Amino acid sequence: MNAEGRAGSRARIAVVGGGLSGLATAFRLASASVEVTVLESSERSGGALRTLEVGGLRLPAGTESFLARKPAAVQLCRDLGLAGELVPPAATGSWLWTERGLVGYPTGTAFGIPGDVGDVFRWPGLSRAGRRHALLDLVKRARKDGGDETLGSLLRRRLGDEATDLAVAPLLTAPCAGDVDRLSVRATFPELEAFEAEQGSLIRGAQAALRRARGAAPVPLHMTLREGIARLPAALAGYLGARVRTGAGVRRLVARSDCGWRLTLADGGTLDADGVVLATGAQGIRELLDPVARSAATELEDIRAASVGSVLLVYPEGTQEALPAGSGFLVPRGHAPMLSCSWLSSVWPHPSYGTRAILRCTVGGVGDEDVLEAGDDDIVGACARHIAAVLPLPEATEASAVVRWPHAIPQYGLGHVERVARLRDHLPPGIFVTGPSFDGVGVTECAAAAAATAEEVAAHLASARSDPTTDQETAR
Image (tube, rainbow, N blue to C red):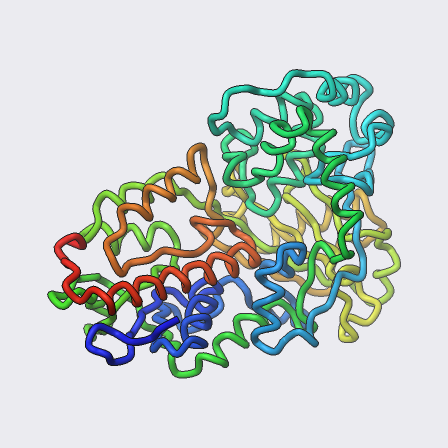
């Protein structure tokens, strides 16, 4: 990556947004000797990856781990010198909330689809009729139309409504707190689309995926860092040092006559840059792009975001033994006041936890965001009561906290992949977008997109250096 600007001086890149995506993009650029400045409007960087003190314990306020079977997040940790801090989960296996209590998911699944026909036939999480309907996936014809469809459309077509609503949807939609009937399958789980196209069946597709996985080197599905996921953005910010400016909101972008960009800051100051990476939410990016790239900004209008909350529950000493083996449970839409419940003390144990059961529930999401309007005590009480109904835990916790994340999780509707491609095609030269609004909401997806964005910036700088007559009028 060449870091020279048009006149041979070091190029400067401004990154707007100091969450994981912005920090990771800036890290990649700075590592290649590009002069970079991160502008974060709030007083702290790191976005949703942070910890909170609850009952004297440091607990994750949001996401607690990342997908490890794709390499981007693991590689980012290694590049930061954190390889020795990576830890796998101490417990695996999920449970499903049912009217009869918790039912374990089959052990051999791919994206929630069992690879063993016997598991589909016998699994008690569905009625006999629901299991029979799901097995029809093995004989139904594959869809020939190549257009995008919702995740719900694909699942209902292949497995039926009961298997979709009560078994597969809770597992697949939990990370994005979305509605299975609104989410694009191509943008969320393209693997399922490939299962049908290549194997003619979701169950056979899961079988093939599991066979491939058995032949590969074993890798944990998820990993985190020894002192928690917040260690990752902290390490990124530590590497970047003074290149991260907090309390530095950006009000406006203006194209300069020398083909660069001028950013007007909230405090009235300005910053000139050869390129700008926009790594905030879709709404904030739209407001900045609207005056300089209206066609690109228009594409952002349909990228909505759901509000969620994390409910952290700390139970008294001696309660950890009440948790059965596994990582937590998932809840079908509308069956309990949470989307999921993770057993932090089982999956990511820490000496400070002692023998206390420590749980994190996710509440809210599409269709249930009004839950977040209730008071903290009401939310905690509702979660604790429902948990006590299926686990031998007391209704009263020792300590608790509720963290609200307004408009935090982008929703990838139909045509999202094509929408993002059009958006990027309409961006002016020197403007780039990255972050969960575009290429995936997880830590791993954001790390991968940050690396790809840094490469795009490098290509832009190289092109600008070799062609100093580039007409900036295309950016107006």
